Amino acid sequence: MLSGRRYRLELDSAQAGLCEMFGDICRVVWNTALEQRREYRRRGAWMNYVPQAAELAEAKREFPWLGDAPSHVLQQTLRDLDRACREHGTFRVRWRSKSRWSPSFRFPAGNLIAVERIGRRWGRAKLPKLGWVRFRWSRPLGGQVRSATVTRQGRHWMVSFLVEDGRSTPDRHALPDRVVGVDRGVKVAATTSDATFHDRAYVTKGEAKRLRRLHQQLARCRRGSNRRRAVLAKINAITGRVRHRRSDFCAQTAHALTTANALVALEDLRTRNMTASAAGTIGQPGRGVRAKAGLNRAILDKGWHLLERALRNAARATGTRVVLVNPAYTSQTCNACGHVDPKSRESQAVFECTACGHGDHADVNAAKNILSAAGHAVSGRGDLATRRSVKRQPPATRARTGRSPRVARAAGIPVL
Image (cartoon, rainbow, N blue to C red):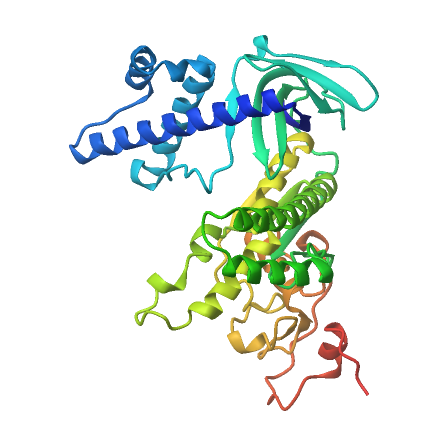
């Protein structure tokens, strides 16, 4: 099984300059090859990796600075571009801007990479044209190196090794009868059908206050100035810590869910479409943009797509099946009787069916519906269909004059 190992590099000034140069050359190759592909598509033709790799070899004779970067690194850039164009379309692939893109390049030849440990906290790797570079030995390598990717994050350089760890996906999960549905939300990151809430705060109050002041300073800075770059570096230092906390939370949650369950059911959410700007989707430009922007930030902050990706990655080691179901009406359907009514969801946390009076936490009810849509029915009392409790006859529909004490207690609201 292929897995990743990520470490922080400790480069000297000469090695950092070489990494910057390699990243700039790869960016130029990417942008030039992308423009060539777009021009071919405008004329109704198609350009792929093989002729572009041949033209790259010819371009090195005309532009000697292209030879400063390793050849297989530039070829890997063309391979990545070819894959991106095939998967997303030539005109949907983005340019790599000098100001917005962090330098990144990959050494695809694992046989040219040597890694060894030189101390309790330090290791070193030999990379083509970079020589021996030191990195923090924060975890064992655990396998044979297949490739290495060098990326700059803020003021630090990182190296990610793709290793073959010798493991394989088991044919059967250790707990084959355990299944769970997961509802992703903007208040609670993940809620399961067994009423477990997975969430954490990624930004402290102090960091949020400092970020707000830094963004105010950034608005007063002149573009291209040294002061603006210094403010951006401070912002990136905070947002980098936030990003690491979010990634760590998703990895831990995914490990817990896949270890304890043979099947994990999720809603098939198109996060990229859901977080698109409202400016181009509303008939009257400018209306609803601020509210939609707040919703987009909440969705992206909880890391919906990152959690799904972490679940698929963790499922390889446990044999867990990750199933995506249609998200339509999962939050409006009563899990006890199947009645669909948007009025049943009184608020973000309170669900009370207008037909049978069944009450539950809204996210837990949605998670049970997600699990039912995956083919594992869950009763309103929380057990599986194989050992279902006997349901009581649903009461007649009553006028809703207020929140019932039972629903209030389920939502955590004190009742006098």
